[in-house]
Length: 396
Image 1 (tube, helix red, strand yellow):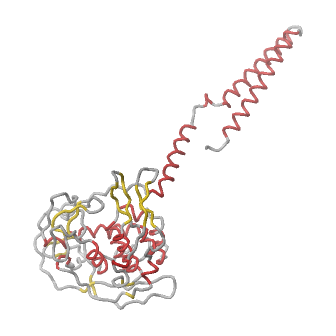
Image 2 (cartoon, rainbow, N blue to C red; image 1 turned 90 degrees about the vertical axis):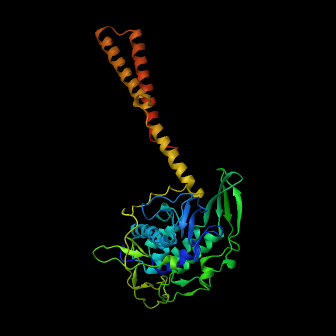
Image 3 (cartoon, one colour; image 1 turned 180 degrees about the vertical axis):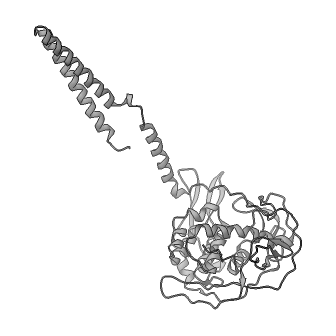
């Protein structure tokens, strides 16, 4: 699904706005990190938020440096896997803006975040665009530490990015609607029973997608204008030839073509954002690759911890599974088995004493023995019934 789409103008716009290097890191004029730095999620990062090398797919490590001419190639390589991820998990057709936003979201989050989301991905696949845009703002927590304990911190910068993504997803321009000074994220830090600090977000004063949507204007169609470090590459031919970003061939393509007219939001519940694609650049003479090895997929990032609000269900599932395994005991330890055993013994006893009574004269000892066998049989019947009732009760 959406195989014809590749990251375009709005993807690079979000990356240029939110993936700049910190102030104390050597960087290009447009903000690409030239030395590896540790991002808030504790991953070493280069360029515009890239965590994997474009030559061999290995993770960026402390002390790594990046040549300015390779910034665009590295970004295109990392964006390629965001494209594949969105195509694998989204089951409906997207327009260019929606595709760009979902690729940006994947670029900024763990591999399982979108796939396991309870509201965002289901809303996208149900084509409930308004609900999907609002669901972006749920993902505003970063990992940190406080007082020596894990800390799930609500980050105002992440909320601003999610508001940008939500508006662009709806075909609206966030530039004037989501200014940094206007974004508010009130919260109170709380120590949970699990020993983890977490910011509890207050609804009073919180900046929401509905608030900024009132101030946003429709996105205008425009040509793709990238900074020198983010120059786009021409598309691959039908024969699968490589493309060139800067002066180095790279496999992932960037969609090109002509601009299409803007589309105003529909009056219905679904808003169709404008499709904005890049203008085909002038031909660029390809240069030999710097590495003969083809890019390999980067290793999967470790799964994030189970969110605090979802830990209860996982614990319950584990406890029920353990209780069920304990309940699968051997038949020899069940009440039904021993009840049936006593019934059989009692009946054999009655048959034995009955035959003795027929063969011999009936006497008081025989009557007592028969009565004893009858009582053992009745006791066995009661134990068997009791075992059956216990076996049919639900597990607790």
